[in-house]
Amino acid sequence: ECRRRAREAPEGRVWGCAMPSTWLLLLAYLTYLALGTGVFWLLESPAAHDSSERFQRDKWALLRNFTCLDGPALDSLIRGVIQAYQNGDIVLDNTTSMGRWEFVGSFFFSVSTITTIGYGNLSPRTMGARLFCIFFALVGIPLNLVVLNRLGHLMQQGVHSCARMLGVTWKDPAKARWLVGSSALLSGLLLFLLLPPLLFSHVEGWSYVEGFYFSFITLSTVGFGDYVIGMNPSRNYPLWYKNTVSLWILFGMAWLALIIKLILSLLEAPRGLYPCYCHSFKGNFKPRSWRQSLDGGAEPHSPQPGCYLEGPVIMNCPEPSVQVSHCGKDS
Image 1 (cartoon, rainbow, N blue to C red):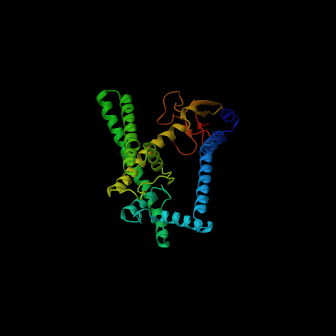
Image 2 (image 1 turned 90 degrees about the vertical axis):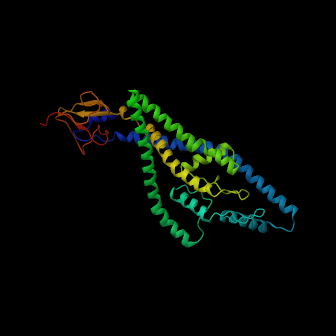
């Protein structure tokens, strides 16, 4: 279809070639969302229904056993318990506070704010803190992105340096790149996703799967809030715990951003699949590979003599919907 439009289009730009790929991308996006909706609905809806029914049974059983309580009073007590839990002041045994707004807890809240994780288990209650949170996030989020980008760049530079050194030593750059890339991927998986659940299992009492789930949800900044560290009032948490987790979040997000960038590059359409049309002065269109030069060779570093590109000069062939390469001598 794109080739047909290119042949029929007048001299100049070729329009409409990117539209089918855009619609296909949107269709794939909506299909993926529909898939997630269906799976979550099938898996979670029965469990949520059973949980609601069980809660109502327990509530009415409590009202039957304690006739001095009425329904509105019990509902008010439940709302008070939920509010106290959100404020970190829930009373269990001899514990009256979980110290969420102490110095360490405030530092962890600041980290979760500028990293946009936003667990939702804790939020400022005073108007002054809410206003400060707005300006704090307004500056902190871009700053966090700059830091993550710099850390990711340093990680990438380290990988490339190791690959170059091994390539010189082994006289096989391709094998060195593959080995160093695989090592970086495996070491990142081990350091940021596979080992931290062991720490969470020991300190929080979670299972390994729960710890792994928390690790990925946190580093991907999804942050549902169903699992949050330092929330069990029956446990004594060491002072270094939240600070160490905060550093793990910072470096882990930088590593995961590199992985997501790699996945994104794989999901995007390969440039070698799109034709580059060379429009001669006679009006004939010749499809060329995106990674081929106009003479059929490798990707060019400069245009051929007598060829020019409409719009800004670029190193590679332009997308069909943006601009078309014109070849041949000007008449």
